[in-house]
Length: 314
Image (cartoon, rainbow, N blue to C red; front, side, top):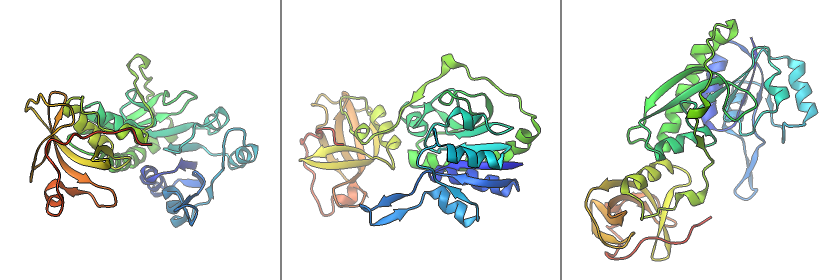
């Protein structure tokens, strides 16, 4: 089977490895253009490009794919049977979606139709879902609306978005491996998505990490895990950004203004939130590493009755 793989970030690497190990021919790996790092000092390859080069697969990095006739002709010239996509980063135009004989399949990081869109991993945590997973699906022109091939699920528990990302990336590679033979033979029972059950997972921005202490501590704790490792949940302490990497919701009732530091102990900072209490356990101050509150207090002071909170930061 002649294939093309399209992906960009670390999440897409296990899928490429799975396709390579399957023994199917990979004519091209398509990934986003390289980006300058450290204000243009050094060019950074995408993780998928690095893996493709390691596997000696030719890499294509078009600046744009829509209306790019040269790129399209290159794909047509190869005449792929299948295109596999995982977090490529751009919507595919119809002429690419309909090019392969067996279609385009996508490795999507949610249990569709829940959480179509750019940030399904973070949103599944923030919304308090019990489970999430991977859906292998046929692509069509809508956003993550195509027929489903198969799913794998995993419990979310107290995982961070970073932990869940790594787990789902591996699950995606496993699911692709399991289904490639069925895709090639046409032995797939396509399952249509129930559009009425769909939800949307919009892209995450830095400002989404600001902690609003008027919200319930359970909601804030989910946000903190959902923002780990990027962009990081944050608040303001004495006009300095304090990133928050760990917290526990407490049932302890508080009538103090939202964001008030109620106590400072080795266990953490008890903060008034939504009429209850949030225990902040891991923090990071500007220019410092993330540390437990206990370790931070060994050389620094945090004052009780100070109120956390500040303006949105871009």
